[in-house]
Length: 350
Length: 225
Image 1: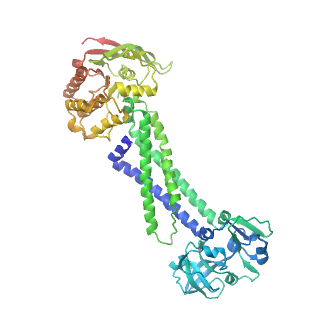
Image 2: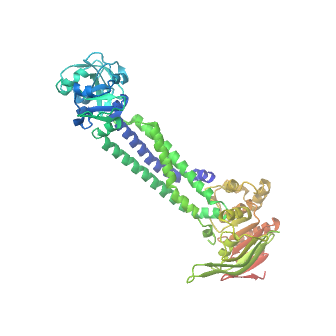
């Protein structure tokens, strides 16, 4: 500890530069992680808010809830009578002269799902011609009391509230009465909805129906899995790069100090002390770099435009930061092995 | 009286075809209160001898003993402890940690060896005699060659060792500084009752020696003063 801290204090520029490089990588990792979470959240926020465990939909929809069509007979086949029948469809939301992509989610007012909707402004719909829309649409110019139309329906719907965490597969949600759905989607009244959302783990062997867990539902969302895998790959690659960079820096710093270490070994200072010194130095550098980059990433998220979806999960960011510190310690293995093998004889005889 | 003794020491390097016999049947002794000089040209085996005296290498054959106790078979950890507690090394270069001030060089020793170091009053008098009291806040890069060597000597003395082993301590010093360092080693040997062994090819140090060994091609002979 003594040697480690004094060296950093004396060699501020050298260690400052090393910390700056690690900090930039950590910053990139945190930004990518929060972007990945932000994007994932735009796919999953609504489903998570519904507190559902499983979804029953038509087999032909291949896991895409907005493509599923259920008849009343299909609904009757499902055992869970507490499950909520939801009716989804993507559609263009028209407000004034503006058009925005949206996802209409038709829910019965008595359904459990409607109770999970968290309002940021206004109230829940009370009439079939009232809707609650995602607060994201407020940024697009939608106002309380404004009349809108969705999809193929010409029915004017009045916005009575804004909901938080109301995104499905990247699209802002328009929550409304299920009775509006068939007109918006343009299907006959023989279809009553898209899926049954249950807070239980359902199992059904009924023909024409398929049960998906929440995780399976997300995986089947168009683009969701590929997008997540891309981010995971980038983050994993950056973490590996961070190990290599830490190893290179520590290797160079250690090689530059070999003669001094050899003299200290000759003077009887145990190699364990010198190894611990390198480990402490690594931890100090990594912790400083990670903490600064966390603060920078938080600052960035505060000033970045709302159109860029960033979501900070402090547990995940904390764990990623911890992983980076551990990776730094792994990167210190090579320099520590070099120190363990220093032969003090090399400095005798100049 | 502390004594460091080598008996019938042989040291070889390499294998059969490339065998180098660095030390041949070397007998040597150094006692406290004396400055012992080992003179010899480059490649004569001086450094090998010093590393064996300091417990950094084991001889191929022969005995190394301190006060009659054989130290040939020390483990790596025991050898570290032995050097930390009994030996003060003064080397040709890299003696001081570049990112520690002179005062911190001693503080580092305190971190590793928590007891048995010189008490502050005694050590202050050493610093005074070595003329480095005013250098305590300086970094090695701010010291001259002579000042660096004096700080290295103080660093070696700080652990209160029985033996001071110096490797070419006057290399790169001018004549005036050579006399200064020679007298200093002599004073340490006599006044502090330490056994001081200096390996050198600098004949100017002969004036200060109590005993001189001549090492040529791995063979040692005691030389006339």
